[in-house]
Length: 135
View (cartoon, rainbow, N blue to C red):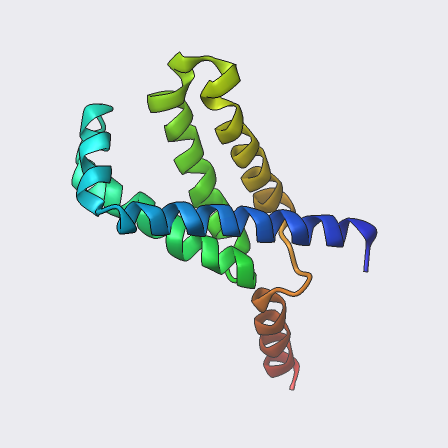
């Protein structure tokens, strides 16, 4: 076990918690509110995009917490953050604009390229596949 495994675990857990809470909030406030905001931002197919973003944030965030499909979920979250920065936050500038989204993007990219196996469901699923393969 490497020292940075602990840091990566914390990044995965915190990022997962942040996105789970944001996704839950989008559904809690009423997905119609989110759809309305997305329409105001000029996002095409706002209804579908809003459900997709809220779903990925909620379910994907939970998947990050348990370490399931970490790299795939991190890629989806990175795409969402790029969209948020470009379509919504960039014109507000760095401070009180897109700095938080940029930090979430960096965390997502870190997990995308590095993965996170410590205390991850992926780790256990990967081991069972290897055992079956060589048994």
